[in-house]
Length: 452
Image (cartoon, rainbow, N blue to C red):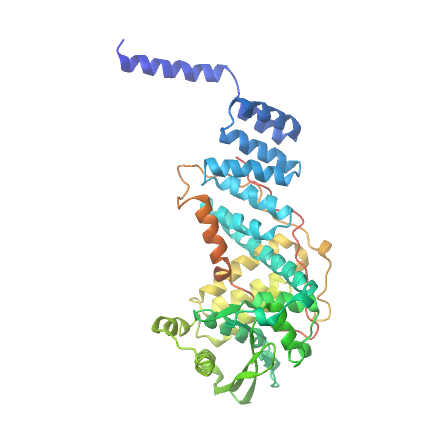
């Protein structure tokens, strides 16, 4: 018998021995976990790790058992060891996210859900996780708004960087209530474009929305001269941009804009633009350039080119998109999905509307039937217990290591996610109703954790 045949025979005999020896330790432990016998599973894994402390599968199974026992911090420790050994383990990333979510550490939960979406080979779960990220981000901003209000007396506007600016909702001073969605829609466009200017640091609109909800402000409060400086202080903005719009005559729109210093109320910019409503997007671009010119901010060619980008030239599509963002602000995801879908149907190239429609549909599934019920402006407040988890992802499998995408170490990847998160997330927008929304969209439990 030559050497090759001898090695083959040894391997064959080893395989037979493994079969004859019955299920492996990991198989037994997995079965115990599936039966809910998590304490027994933990005992086995602890004994096994004494003999083989670097075995990734043992740490993973220990983490799952700890997660099932709601010992989330210990579960995180176990999954950190998994990711240290295999920085592309999407299953561990998912469990890390779910554990942090249960601890209400939304910042880390968002990071690890995003990491899961980056790593996983199973694309069918990405939309669900993306929707969950969006809901959790709203909850994170809600926490920050509550904290800002608690610390309001300690906030010092003089320490806020001079290049920070917040854009408040524009006021509809005309008679056409069908233009109300533009109150936030216009603010969102301005935020999107000003964010492309490197010399400025722009407060995202969703942060403003959560602060408005926590302060229980109505539409009249938002245009009150006393309220604006307080909002600027709480948002950490040195300047506030606000304004109004109204129709002069059929299809002619006038937009006024003001930039004021938060601390003194001194006006740095006073400008306006008038033009055909059907060229709304061009009007907004002209307004942006006039504001920046009066602020004496010089733009590079690349910044100017970026600002000139238009997501859609279809006015009806943008109006529907703005309606969708308003519904999303109010936790009415089913209605948001309908509005986004109408926007995408009106302009098939409006990619932002398509993406928002998908996440709104998945968000509606996550928060349950409460968001599907039509809510009037006077009946927007709902308790956290009214939202129930429905249609959760179920068992999300771990990707085969051979199929998982690569892309740097776990530390680099998480750092990149943290730095780019705010720029990649599309904040909502929409109308400010007379009775502002005070909706919570809690997630009673994370989606069912992935199984092997």
